[in-house]
Every structure is written in C-alpha cells, then in structure tokens.
Amino acid sequence: MSKRTKKVGAMGRYGPRYGVRDRVKIRDVERRQKAAHTCPNCARPTVSRRDTGIWACSKCGTTFVGGAYIPRTDAGLSVDKAIQGVIDRLRSGQATEEEA
Image 1 (cartoon, rainbow, N blue to C red):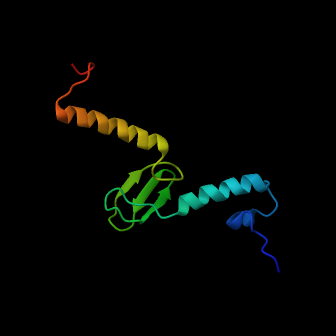
Image 2: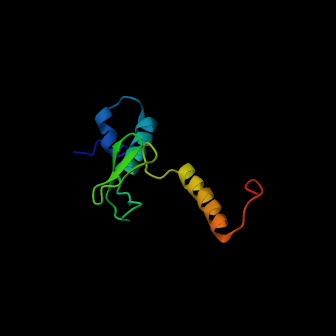
Image 3: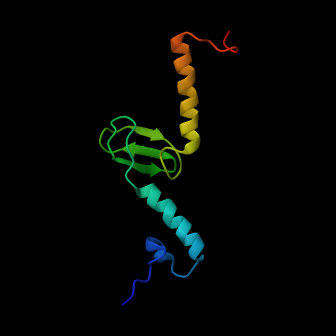
C-alpha cells in the first residue's frame, strides 16, 4: 500500500480539502511551531507553546511572549538588536543627539 500523505505529512488529516499548496504551507508552519526551541533563560531546548504568542520553558519555568508560531520572530530579533545597541552606547558614555 502506498503512503497517502507523502506531500503533506500530518496535514493529511484534512483529506482532499483546501488544496495541496495550503496544506503544505500549514505543514511547514506546524513543524516550526512544534520543533524544540531553546529557552532564553536556561538555554535548553525545552520551550513549548502554551497559547497564541505565549511560550514557556518546561525545565526552568520561564514564561515569555513571542510570535504566534515561533518564539523569536525576525522583527523581534531586530528590535532586540536595536535596544542592545542603545544600551551599549549608554554604558560606554556616548549619548545620542536625542538624549543630549
């Protein structure tokens, strides 16, 4: 007997509904969502999704917010970099024009 969900994997639960393209997109999102993510506090791959945008580490108990399907989005990473740059400038004593 052949494998019936070769293209879409677990999305085979939807059967022929919604089309292959949509099921493949959902498959990719769910794989990223259910993958092991590292905790920003203890650096262990034990973070899981509790609710939409709420993530928790099962090892250290840290709960934090992130993206709906992945804990760290590209936009969130760029914001963190910008904030870290400001913190570094303040620590080194270089104030920006807005702060002066």
